[in-house]
Length: 271
Image 1 (cartoon, helix red, strand yellow):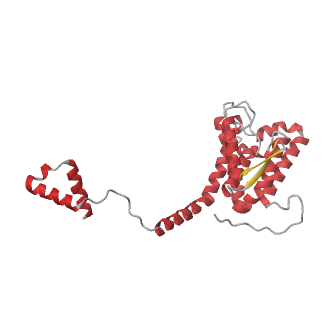
Image 2 (cartoon, one colour):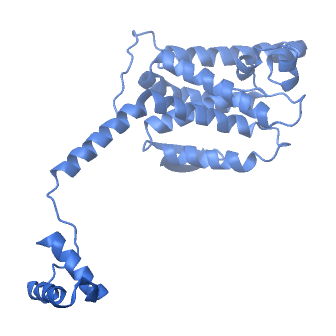
């Protein structure tokens, strides 16, 4: 698999300087929105207009599938999402290119929200957070770099190292198991839908050409292998064939047994 990395002009050193433009912009916007709603708690009505809900879409708030992903339910929610974006987003963006990365991020978030709406039975429930888009980033990273070693701190104490594909597969399994709990307050279906969207985006962007190259290599390998005839029953003895032919001359072909007919058939294909 080959990737085209975008180059960016050098900038002054700082917290955001190691980040490509889309990752830096997304983190800044998410943090800024969180600060605004934290410092101005009277904006609850505005948050309701921006959060995703079935009731909101019925009232014509068609911007909600996009705006909901820039809201968060608390500091921990924001921290985990931005932490993942900060560490896995830059390499993913450089591999995909900024435009494709932004498109993948937004599509994963939108489809994650729509997946949550589809399976959420409570019409007035609200969904906020970038988790659907972040799961899209996780799936995209694991698809691009499936064997990359990632170390997690379980409960911020116990380090566990695993490959990227194992991490995403494990998270997807956990989300699938928890998706049946509608009262958990966590949009598990949004996570699953976002991850699926991220995987599909990378698959369409890179994997088709990659699979074609693999198929070409397999075809060349098979063509270069020495030909080995398929094993089959040994050819019939010529003396036995002669005896059967004499029997046909003397008694007619209807006198042959099933075994003799099979022997004659094999002889016709061999000699």
